[in-house]
Length: 308
Image 1 (tube, one colour):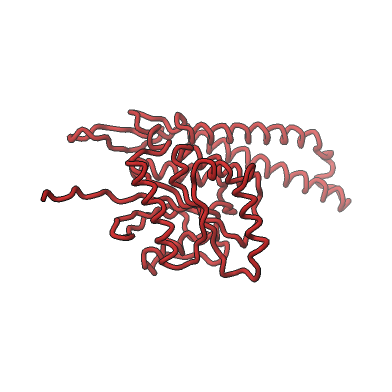
Image 2 (spheres, rainbow, N blue to C red; image 1 turned 90 degrees about the vertical axis):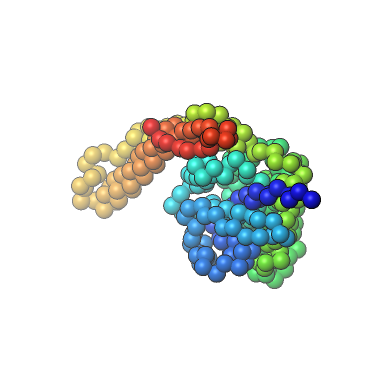
C-alpha cells in the first residue's frame, strides 16, 4: 500500500478581547506552561505567537493574537497588525479557521464590538464563517448563569452582533478552561476545514496576487475607510474646539477659574491633535505596506513583505 501523503498542519487563529483567556486556552490545549498569561485585564500577548500541538492525531498551529480593548492600542491597530503578521508569516495561505473567545464576565461597547466583527469579516470572508467558533469563557466565575445565557442568545440571535456569524454557519459553544474543552473546540475547526477541502479565506485569496498592496484587500480598505473617517471627525472636532478657545488673557490670569478654563481647553486640544497625528501616521503606514509574491523553483508562491 502506498504511503499516505503527509497532511499539512491545521492553522487556527485565536482572537478575543483582553482578558478573554486566549493565552490560557493555548496553554491548556498545548500543555505548555511557559506561555505568559496576563493578570486580569493586563494584556500579556503583545504580538501574535504560533504554538504547535496535536489534536486527535492532527498537527495544529494555534495562533494566539493580541487582545482587543487594549488601553494602548485600538482594535483597528490590533487587527491591522494581525493581518500583516499573518501575511508576512505566510499563514494566510492555509488559514483554516478562527476561534473567537468571549468572556461572559465582561460588558462591551456594542458599537466597538460590531466594528470588530466587521473587520474580522474582512479577514475571513463570509464564505469562511462555517470555520468560525465563538467560544464563551469564564463560566466558572458565575453564581447564576440565567442572565448571561440570555445575553449570549441576544448576541447570537437575529440582529445581534454575531448574527452574521450565525447565519454563515459559525458554531457557538462554551469553553470550560481545560484541555478536553479546548481540543473539542479546535476539533470543530478541523472538521469544518476538512469539509471545506482546502478552501481559502478572503485575506488569503486577495493576497494571492503579485505585488498585492495591503490596502487592495477588503481588510485594508476597511481599515483605510475607518482611519479616513476618524481623521475627518477629529478635524471637525478640532475646528469646533478652536472656536471655543478662551481669551489669551486666561493663560496667565490670576483668576483660578480662568486659568483652569484655559488649561482644560489646552489639554483637550492637545489630546485631539495627538489623536489626529496618530491616525495620520497609521494611514501612511497602512498605505505603505505591500505583500510581495514570488514563484519558488517548484512553481508555488511564497510571500514576503516590505514598506515604502
